[in-house]
Image (tube, rainbow, N blue to C red; front, top):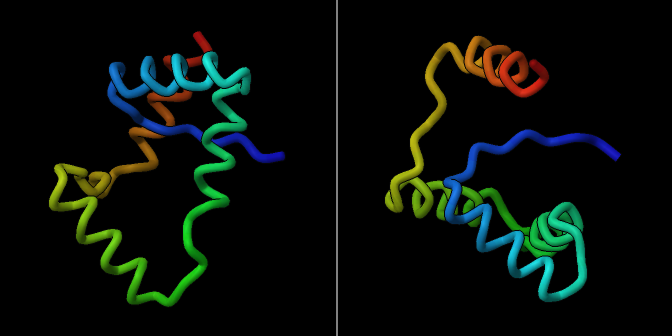
Length: 78
């Protein structure tokens, strides 16, 4: 099993935790199931998905994403 770090708005995290708790599953299992349910389709679908995410306010990581990741990991494990 691999670990994954995500940046998610606090209210979304709380809603996901509440949902997982109400359904007696862990948040990890909930996310895993969601990712497994994503369609395994053509690159065109993924391009459409990416465009939709960008339209809904997702921001591409900065060019210095590695520095951001390192800072996050450092804060997380202090």
